[in-house]
Image 1 (spheres, helix red, strand yellow):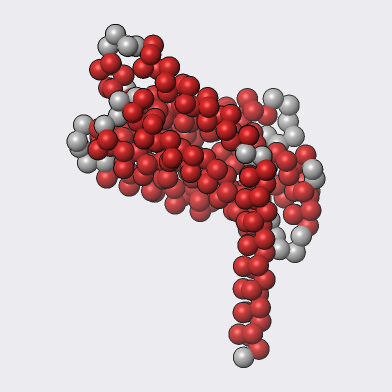
Image 2: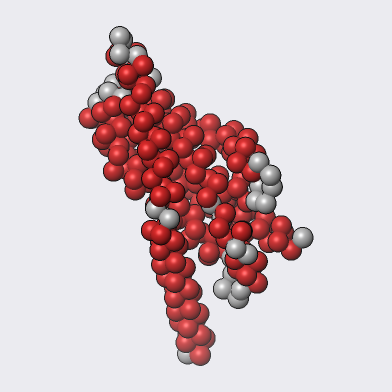
Length: 236
């Protein structure tokens, strides 16, 4: 009975700490909403300019629309990775989190989860507009949204590893891009293939299944690696 009571108390403290951290991270995103809007404006402009630059042959855009969309999304995410852990590092909160009794791993998972929401929700809302701008068929819209929700968390969790490796370094954005782009290539291939297959009426289950595998792998090991790198870097 005592063991069960202690376990319930431990679970209560865990969920309370998770809820507080989640509320804090969501509030921070709402306060700095402009950091999210500027890259989305860049995404919208880029999607609109591609068809305008090749108006003489619209069919050429349709053939490579999935690749164009995902390349732009990838570069958008690389640009936004600079915001991950930036404020916590500059304000000295990471040192406090390492020393806190609640542990750093839960906080890292929540930060990555909120960053996924910050990227995934606006892109999901804009998906019909982006598909229309690039002449992606409506029948591929569900596949496009599914690929976004499978690929974006994978990109964020993998990008988190590269981000913590470059914290505090000069030209960290450039170094982060160099580290993370090779890891993003498989995600780019499967995500664009899924949308391309759906656009021509073929089944996209294969690429989506591989995106699911990459998602499970990245979510499983990335927080552990980020936790270890942060503890090692701060202790030294």
